[in-house]
Length: 542
Image: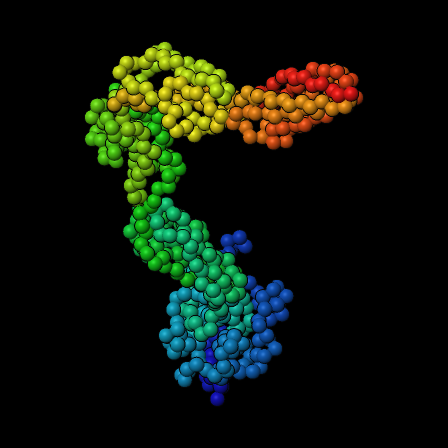
């Protein structure tokens, strides 16, 4: 025996239950019907074909309304139509409860899945004899959820016709919504959150993956309560969130589908923020007693609400020494001074950054009243010396250091220095160091010209032969084992030139007359070995 709203063979009242329900809905909407622009609830279309032509389908019920679903009467019938939609959505064609099938029974029989939340795919249900339904109640299919107070339904009615309607919450609103098999947006991959839960550090949520594809919106929570305005994917906790537990609720929405949400908790409470040092403080000035040091810089990100410079001596805070300037006293003599930039901000850990140390602090500076002078020649065998000037305080001591190519020369600690062959080709410099206890050491630097040169000696041996002469020249240059350069030998109008090898050249000059000749020898020199000239005699044989 079929069951459900509008059973014509049982009673006349039962037969017209859905028709009365629909009439009650129409009656409840009459006060809302006026000029077109004033309609907030009402019919969108009537009839299978007109609705289809207007873009409002019936999911194939027009071709299947001669069949019974969930044992409801076939044809135009609210219960058979909604049962058809449930079966088409995936439920078996077996009524989910054993009681009567009239529309008014649906919500009471299925009370465990009935609530006040409209969702796409849910069953809109009216209890019997309420505004919007007759004595048998009414059911419809929720096609769209515009908002929690506005929905669009499709429905069929015993003794009536197929409709799509828009409902606005008020008189005629459904008694409840039965959630047999709603259309839901499924979360395929959970959203994630990257970043550390720390004041001033951004947290960023990913949307995750949803089926079907949906738009997402974010809401950040603090101890479970929504944070006003925190609706972007990225949220940076402020000082007010320190110690609180955060989470982000990601809600997926799609037109005509019920929204879905997941909440991702942040596992640790919000920690204090950390300053990042953009620039350490820098101390300028001479570390002399009665003079002042000045600290500059000490920049932070984010900008601190408060900051100051504190001073330390040998890494111990100087009592009362704050601000960019420190006057050096005798109590600080011998100590190294640092400036410390200190930053505060609500919700952040106090931060400090030290400058490189300056000092130690000394009593004063040694001043040179009359300048020192360097003298002498940078040649092997010559003397170099420093002529001292005058200075204050007069009891300061002076020590001298001579250097070869920047390296101190062992034992060369007098005011003068004799240039030795080992210096050939090197650059000789000198330092005069002035010292006095509790005074800053002062070092004077002297450059003694270019590379040290050496003066060569030319040893010449001549041998006369028939019509020619042989000249052998040995070059001896202190400090240079293999002098380069070029040797030129001239006898009369005849000359010959050669590069020495191992400091020696052997030159033969032919076509000479058999007489005693004068031989002229010149050596070009190098950058280190100086040029030289000499002469000799040779008798050419017949």
